[in-house]
Length: 126
Image (cartoon, rainbow, N blue to C red; front, side):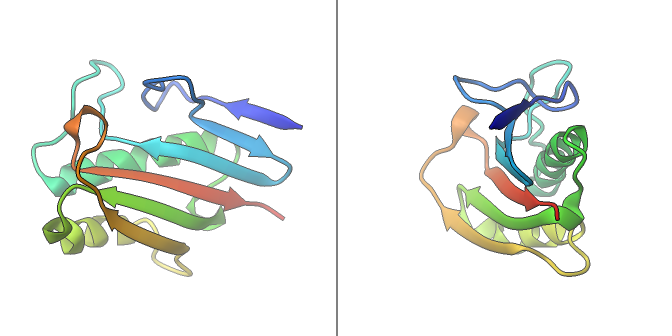
Protein backbone atom coordinates (compact mmCIF):
# COMPACT_ATOMS: atom_id res chain seq x y z
CA UNK A 1 0.00 0.00 0.00
CA UNK A 2 1.22 3.50 -0.73
CA UNK A 3 0.97 6.62 1.39
CA UNK A 4 1.01 10.10 -0.11
CA UNK A 5 3.31 12.56 1.67
CA UNK A 6 2.86 16.34 1.41
CA UNK A 7 4.65 19.07 3.33
CA UNK A 8 3.45 22.66 3.55
CA UNK A 9 7.13 23.62 3.94
CA UNK A 10 7.83 22.65 0.31
CA UNK A 11 6.20 23.93 -2.87
CA UNK A 12 2.94 22.33 -3.94
CA UNK A 13 3.26 20.08 -7.00
CA UNK A 14 3.04 21.85 -10.36
CA UNK A 15 1.10 18.99 -11.92
CA UNK A 16 -0.64 15.68 -11.27
CA UNK A 17 1.96 14.17 -8.93
CA UNK A 18 2.65 13.98 -5.21
CA UNK A 19 5.58 15.54 -3.37
CA UNK A 20 6.43 12.04 -2.19
CA UNK A 21 5.04 8.53 -2.01
CA UNK A 22 5.90 6.06 0.73
CA UNK A 23 5.69 2.37 -0.18
CA UNK A 24 6.68 0.09 2.68
CA UNK A 25 9.87 1.55 4.15
CA UNK A 26 10.85 3.30 0.91
CA UNK A 27 10.12 6.97 0.26
CA UNK A 28 10.17 8.30 -3.30
CA UNK A 29 10.52 12.09 -3.34
CA UNK A 30 9.58 13.90 -6.54
CA UNK A 31 11.98 16.36 -8.13
CA UNK A 32 12.12 19.65 -6.29
CA UNK A 33 12.89 23.07 -7.69
CA UNK A 34 13.69 26.35 -5.95
CA UNK A 35 10.28 27.97 -5.50
CA UNK A 36 9.55 30.16 -2.50
CA UNK A 37 6.77 28.37 -0.63
CA UNK A 38 5.02 31.59 0.41
CA UNK A 39 5.25 33.63 -2.78
CA UNK A 40 5.65 31.00 -5.50
CA UNK A 41 8.55 33.04 -6.89
CA UNK A 42 11.76 31.42 -8.08
CA UNK A 43 14.78 31.48 -5.79
CA UNK A 44 17.52 31.87 -8.35
CA UNK A 45 19.83 34.77 -7.51
CA UNK A 46 22.70 32.32 -7.99
CA UNK A 47 23.14 28.58 -8.41
CA UNK A 48 24.34 28.09 -4.81
CA UNK A 49 21.21 29.72 -3.37
CA UNK A 50 19.03 27.80 -5.81
CA UNK A 51 20.60 24.46 -4.85
CA UNK A 52 20.23 25.14 -1.12
CA UNK A 53 16.55 26.00 -1.63
CA UNK A 54 16.01 22.69 -3.46
CA UNK A 55 17.78 20.76 -0.70
CA UNK A 56 15.67 22.50 1.97
CA UNK A 57 12.52 21.44 0.13
CA UNK A 58 13.77 17.85 0.02
CA UNK A 59 14.55 18.06 3.74
CA UNK A 60 11.02 19.33 4.51
CA UNK A 61 9.42 16.45 2.61
CA UNK A 62 11.74 13.86 4.11
CA UNK A 63 10.99 15.24 7.60
CA UNK A 64 7.23 15.20 6.99
CA UNK A 65 7.54 11.45 6.38
CA UNK A 66 9.82 10.90 9.38
CA UNK A 67 12.99 10.52 7.31
CA UNK A 68 16.22 12.50 7.05
CA UNK A 69 19.13 12.84 4.67
CA UNK A 70 20.79 9.91 6.45
CA UNK A 71 18.06 7.67 4.97
CA UNK A 72 18.61 8.80 1.37
CA UNK A 73 20.04 6.01 -0.80
CA UNK A 74 19.76 7.64 -4.25
CA UNK A 75 19.53 11.14 -5.72
CA UNK A 76 18.97 12.29 -9.27
CA UNK A 77 20.19 15.75 -10.19
CA UNK A 78 19.08 17.47 -13.37
CA UNK A 79 20.96 20.63 -14.31
CA UNK A 80 20.60 23.06 -17.17
CA UNK A 81 24.31 23.78 -17.49
CA UNK A 82 27.07 21.28 -16.71
CA UNK A 83 29.36 24.25 -16.04
CA UNK A 84 27.41 24.63 -12.75
CA UNK A 85 28.28 21.07 -11.69
CA UNK A 86 31.03 21.92 -9.19
CA UNK A 87 29.02 24.73 -7.55
CA UNK A 88 25.92 22.53 -7.24
CA UNK A 89 28.07 19.66 -5.99
CA UNK A 90 29.57 21.86 -3.26
CA UNK A 91 26.15 22.98 -1.97
CA UNK A 92 24.63 19.49 -2.30
CA UNK A 93 27.57 17.91 -0.45
CA UNK A 94 26.82 19.96 2.67
CA UNK A 95 23.74 17.78 3.22
CA UNK A 96 25.59 14.47 2.86
CA UNK A 97 28.78 14.82 4.90
CA UNK A 98 29.03 11.09 5.69
CA UNK A 99 27.99 8.10 3.64
CA UNK A 100 26.58 10.01 0.65
CA UNK A 101 23.93 8.28 -1.46
CA UNK A 102 24.28 6.93 -4.98
CA UNK A 103 23.58 9.59 -7.57
CA UNK A 104 23.58 10.66 -11.17
CA UNK A 105 23.83 14.18 -12.53
CA UNK A 106 22.40 14.83 -15.97
CA UNK A 107 22.49 17.97 -18.07
CA UNK A 108 19.11 18.66 -19.67
CA UNK A 109 17.95 21.28 -22.14
CA UNK A 110 15.12 22.63 -20.01
CA UNK A 111 13.52 22.22 -16.58
CA UNK A 112 10.14 23.30 -15.14
CA UNK A 113 9.83 27.09 -14.77
CA UNK A 114 13.19 27.30 -16.57
CA UNK A 115 15.10 26.63 -13.32
CA UNK A 116 18.76 25.66 -13.28
CA UNK A 117 18.57 22.59 -11.05
CA UNK A 118 16.04 19.94 -10.01
CA UNK A 119 16.76 17.14 -7.53
CA UNK A 120 14.77 14.04 -6.55
CA UNK A 121 15.64 11.30 -4.09
CA UNK A 122 14.79 7.88 -2.73
CA UNK A 123 15.08 7.18 1.01
CA UNK A 124 14.82 3.88 2.88
CA UNK A 125 14.36 3.03 6.55
CA UNK A 126 15.01 -0.32 8.12
